[in-house]
Length: 347
Image (cartoon, rainbow, N blue to C red):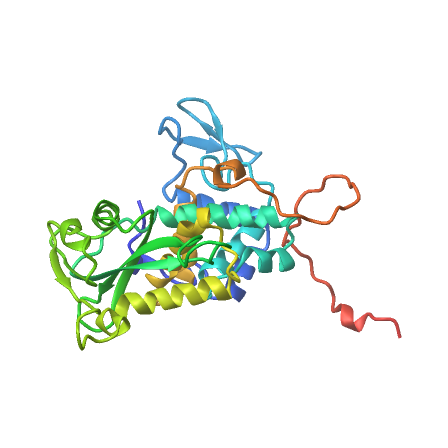
């Protein structure tokens, strides 16, 4: 069971700063011990039969019930990873704590990973854990609108090659500012598609503000519908009638074009939008390190996935050929003091 947020203490239950992260987890053994503490705070519980067990000299637990040997990463997104946990922890921090996150290309340049594919897979696995976190539906006053994202295909219309996204943005309970946000990628602007997207994200009975699209009245049965038609004579612009959802669209578009350079593939757009929503919905967290703890917490409950599970279109990017080399293990962030190498330079 997750700890209440108020019960978690920065600097005790989770690192509050990047320097603290690196001082807490200098080795993979320290990372593994933290995962054990988060996953089994009251002692080992076998994920297969629920019995207790004891830890052996090989860092594996022996279940007293089914007699299986279980590692702390078994049944999590860290299962079977070859990447050291110290690298995982650094990537998790860089992904969730900065306001704009980080791209796989940037991490590939600075982290000790063997390939771009490796770090992309790590980030995508973490996004699957983020997706499972925000399940509580929005309520109260909610703005809903659609957004076309993507480029224009050659020879097509202005909408060819674009993805249709529905966003629901909650007004803050005190009436000042915005609350949470949810995204859904849909196929068409039909009442049925809109109904599915809204029903899975907004509590029935909520007051929903939309534009004047004809599909909304039948899609919003069970909700209080407030349409605002920007096509009416003397109507205000759309960003004035629906300020919250248009602000979120603008921020999400800027993030996709800035951090990810517009390189998000259509089949993965919903995962990136879930990542954006994860940080946006926690923008008022009293300590940014709390996001690190929450993602670790869900990463050890999310089921393991493989690269093949994550790939939507198996079309490898063209890369220049490299001479064949012996396979190597990914690098680690474990270090030893370097004794001020700048002082050891040849004179």
